[in-house]
Structures are given as C-alpha cells and as structure tokens.
Amino acid sequence: MQIKVEHVQAGHIDIYSKGGRIRRIYLPVRLRNELLDWVGEESGFLFVNQKGTPLTPRGIAQKLKELALKHGVNPDLIHPHAFSHLYALNFLDKNSDLVLLADLLGHASVETTRIYLQRTGNEQKKLVDRVVDW
Image (cartoon, rainbow, N blue to C red; front, side, top):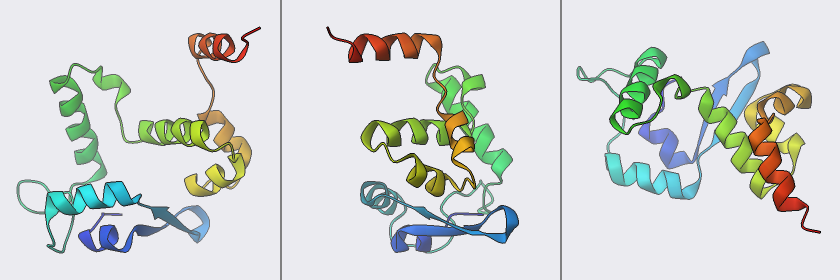
C-alpha cells in the first residue's frame, strides 16, 4: 500500500490485511498537518524515489537505515516494523486499552499484541522503581 496525499487529506488509509479484512489506519491531526505542509496540496504518492515512482517497502527500509546512520543510530534497530512496537508502547503509555490497541494494529488476538509489549529487564526495573515509591 502506497500512501497518497489524498489519504493524508482524508485522515486515514484503508488497507486490506490478512483474511481480506479492511484495516483503517488513522493519521493524527498533527502528523497530517506536517505532511501537508511538507508536500503542499499536490496529489499523488507521498514518498517517491528519484524517478518519481512510489518507494517500495524495501526502498523505505533502505532510506530509514540511511537516516539512522546519518543521525548516529544503530541501523540494525531501525526498520519499518519497529515503528509498530514504538507505536504500541507510546499508545499504552497514554491509554491502557489493550483491546483497542490490538484492533488498531490489526491483530486478530490480543495475545499477538502482548508480544509487542514485552519489555527488557532494564525497562522493567525502571518501571518498578517508578511505580513502587514506598
């Protein structure tokens, strides 16, 4: 699925996922505004290569790795799927509705979503230190 300016203007993207289910991806207002400021009011694909054709998933992954190197981030940690994990963690920091999160991520089972939320030992220690204040 390629993102078009029209999707940004509508505020969501509908994609077909496993089993032919339609999954709606909502774009927050702040992100929509920033994207529209960036591309203007043109129509067409949002992310294109030098030839003007849409970036492939592999092309997007490559661009992310280039940006990681440019900004001193380990490129092995940066890939498109990592953003699902980041989204899930940030969502749960602000809203504890695991069922809604599973739906937003397109998971048929909440158990699949729980896998995304496993924290490292260091993260667990910091969380316990923050929560237990007695």
